[in-house]
Image (cartoon, rainbow, N blue to C red; front, side, top):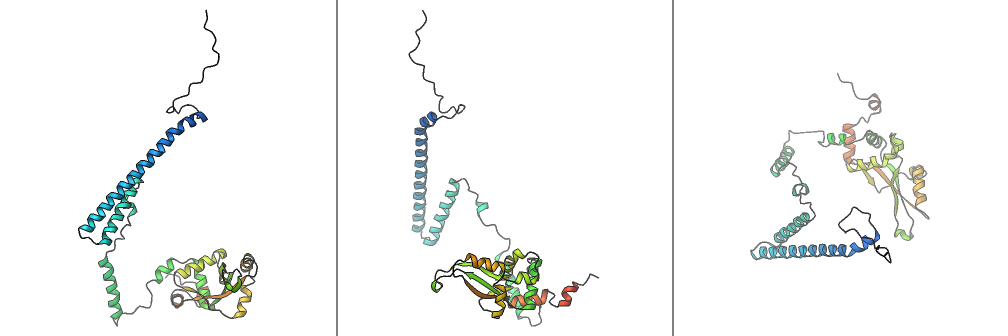
Amino acid sequence: MSDPLPDHEPAPVEAPLDDLSGPITVNRVVRAAPGMVRLAALSWWHLTEWTARTTIDSGRDLVAALASGARPSEAVREATADLRRIGRQAMGTDDGEALRPQPSGVTTEQLHARGAELLYRSADVWYSSDIHPAYERILDELAPDEARILRFLATEGPQPSVDVRTGRPFGIGSELVASGLSMIGLRSGVRDLARANAYQNNLFRLGLIWFSREEVDPVRYQVVEVQPDVAEAIKRAGRLPRVVRRSIHLTPFGEDFCRTCLPIDEAAFWRGPEPAR
């Protein structure tokens, strides 16, 4: 006689949790949750235990260093360095050479000798130099458009510029919308007009120009304030915008640089450099 049929179908056999070949189902995730929680708790406990042990060891080292007569500042500095090193080891980034600043190759004695040489030259009545040693380096850091801006400021003098700020009662809480807006890029004839402000920032970095709070002739600001970029900044400033008038001019260092390095004379500028013989 054949076996009787079962009252219900047998329940499907779940694959073991370590068998990842089958599809990931909700039942498998639910059954794995307790194990995942235990794993997270165990990892947290090991991390806490490691942190406490490291802190205690560093504290003991600090107390031992203080007891041996070391200076408190030096002992704290060494303990902090140990904690940083251990933290890098825990994160797997213990690369001391990569994190440590690389030496420049110049020693203190060499720098001292160069400084002494400068003082010696300054005391030598027979030594004279009309060229600042930084001029050659500055020329390497200038864009062609920046040279045009310098020549324009050298021939035309200080130029008007404006800052646009939001309007607030008594100026309290006023925010800057745009700064250093001028017609220097347009009037100097730069090729990339969109980078005029970036050019001016680089010239300021090199110490060649200065953004002054002083105003120039008030009539000259009327043309600047109707330029499209200024009008757009005034629109973004909202209700009751405030326009602050300033100026941009060469520094004394920039004036000497232009006299030394640039053909300020109009005829010399258009004639160009003398051909090599």
